[in-house]
Image 1 (cartoon, rainbow, N blue to C red):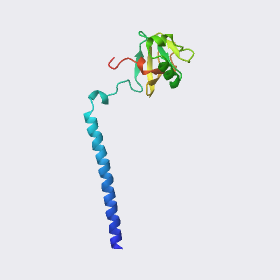
Image 2: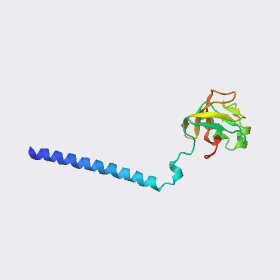
Image 3: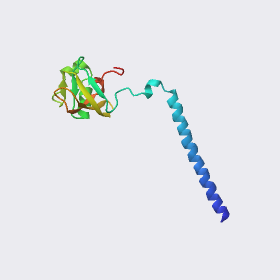
Image 4: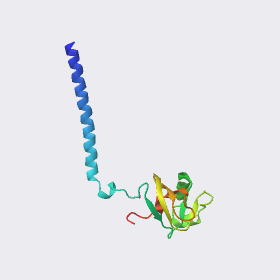
Length: 139
């Protein structure tokens, strides 16, 4: 019985050592990969949730959508600013806004950002805006 208990103890120690080595190797690999990335990759590019941003409509109108899919469908169907101006935004339930808006970021979903409008006649409205309509980083 003494040898059976020692075999179990040795098995537990070996298993714990294997699992520790596995997690240690994964942790070291992640740290090495992070060190090899450029500095700008680790810093957030777009504004974060809770930030207040001014969206400028001088180059093209702002498109506010009630849902993510409507916005993605519109931007997929009309990929340039010129084609979006001529597109059927109203038929797709998007609001076309021709003035700058101050918004608070509520949520992100890949290329769409949920915002709450803080200024103008649409103040209080919650909508989705495509990330292309946000100012470039650094502005």
